[in-house]
Length: 263
Image 1 (tube, helix red, strand yellow):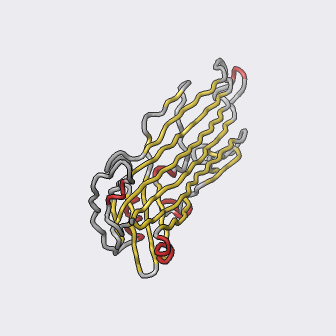
Image 2 (cartoon, rainbow, N blue to C red):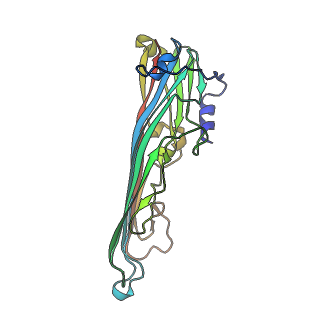
């Protein structure tokens, strides 16, 4: 589905065949074996987010039926993918390098309730770059480069994946952020062709807010009240009585798409 977004952005553009590259000398960058004039595209960035909520105890003393609960999750990640396309541009989903890492960390605090003592539990889960084509939810990471008159337009797509099951203590469960930006890293940038021709190297910045994957998605939100639903941070619980729940979440990423003319 996400791959279609890139296709829609650059519909009607002919797709260039992947460039075959020889094995690089260990003392040189891997892309140095590609023909002069080809375009090296580097899609890189960093991101992170938080998800927090608090639910007051249900009842007190021996009448307690649910403990006071607080949850705090944070994520942080980075990635750097490189591709080579021909001098006339085109599309390719054969990256020459994929580098990415990150970690999700969740902490839950339960207050005393009835015969149960207070407790704290922690979960962590690491993130990694896709290992091979078809590994993950998205089509394999790729880029599309369009050289049209005086304008250069580039679309890039990537993702990070969980590297293993969460490691948890105290019987906790990781409850990931309501927006998981690392599962759909996408950017589209355009800039004057003259900026690339001037030095043969240009970086265009992007943010999560400019990603087509998140056009209709709230990137942050919060609620506070008896009708606050901590599963989605919205005021949609029926009844609206009792102590207030609180909830908040947010996610962001940013980076650059760099284009270099191989010389």
